[in-house]
Image (cartoon, rainbow over all chains, first blue to last red; front, side, top):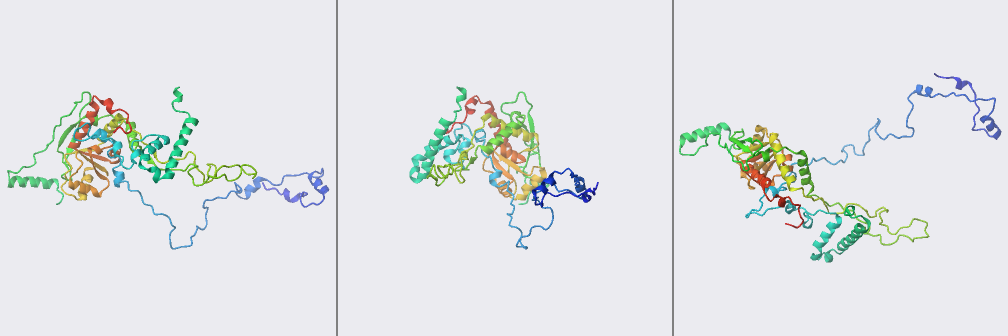
Length: 183
Length: 278
């Protein structure tokens, strides 16, 4: 429905009027009445009404693609090299993990082995160690103090001891012991 | 030396027989037809499997052997298999990720500004955790070990479940030995292709020094791997599609697993692993 009422009626604008009396008159005057002349349906009929006013669409909607300064070369993207699932490390992963079951046991000629004895890539003091940071650091200090670590790595030795002290205080004064729930 | 085929072998047998009857020839098939099982099974039926050869590309069945059901016909427990794989992946993992605590970060010894008077917030150090560039409070601390030991029986049953699953799914083959006629990698390729063995094959033998030819042939391909019996594990068995055991390997595996199942000092073996006890 297109109304033509807006064309015919005159209405007194509020802005651009100097005197206060005129403004007051424009706001309330029994001779005048405000009539709706703008309908949303008319706007919709003209075309699609834009939604999300102020929103900037970041996705490509159409138009020229971005161009680089060098038209001959491709963009510097790293070449994809799929990982080799069958290199020696990956193909034989897990070998000898069951050596205490499938290997010799209590045999005179061959000594029985445990998988912790085969953890060659783990530092020797950390092989077969299960614990939290405090326990791990205590073990590290035990292993390292006899070898002159304090002389060769003074800062790290100091940091190690500080950390142990802090963790002792934190764990014993600030946190609940796991045995408390049994008490 | 060119790879031999069934026809060539038969021809050679006939020629040898004709030319020099004193020479030993291959006896008629089946060659292997019985195997004594340790700890004879009482309640489960014995399983049987073909024994093939590796001499020719085409499969030649040399005989039928018995397999112990406690090792090869255990109901596959998928949860135990999963536990085993997870253990294998995690127990050797050490995380070296590290973050510095406030007193480890360089600097931060001096009070940035006096306590009162500046109108700004009060601080004691520029490396406090609330500052940009400051220490991390509960971050990763290197090295963090993820070691734990799965129980002896969980690992034992993991091996049994995986072997049983492999046999049940036709992914387990038994051969007499790993001796092949050439060290040509294409011989292995053709053999695996011909017999319908999976893309990846794991050959297991009792001895850890394998014959030269198969070592050379499988060296080229990463998906054909050789392993001794003591190196067998759940992860490798699942990673490789097909598992090929020699007769000696079958004997050894059965002997080891049945020994552990029937030992009378199992409590000692099943005890929790103690650090520095070895």
